[in-house]
Length: 155
Image (cartoon, rainbow, N blue to C red; front, side, top):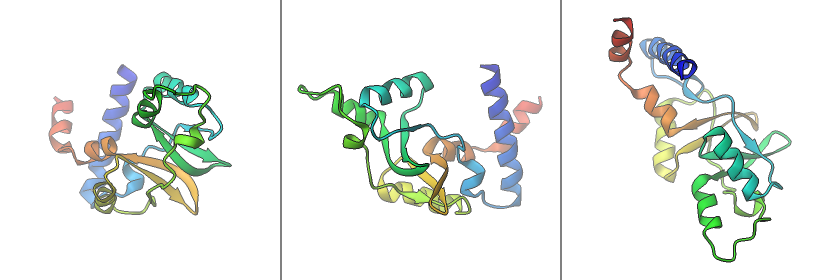
């Protein structure tokens, strides 16, 4: 838990510095290490990967290019069907219409996209290549009143 706390403190301090200079960009808040899954994997494999890594979504990629996303909610829907087949492929249930942003986009426009499409994650791409993912949690952390947190951390 200490590692996670140290990471959050470091991240919050970075964001605070960037906020002083102006509105953060997607690249300032996004998660760079994105967990992916192959479209030919089974939904059971995807569920296991999510549980092991304590995440709620996996990006589906082919040759390092994002082609879809699968969430824990998608898996829950599929696995709750009475005639559910354990060999169902990720490709068959993933959401194919990805909503993307670029690293240089401002956070305000990213949030607007999330609201417009009623989604919790945006895929961050540069020149068609995956560079990160921006989640609603990333945005929430970015909009936290960092000066109060920093003040508490200094005490």
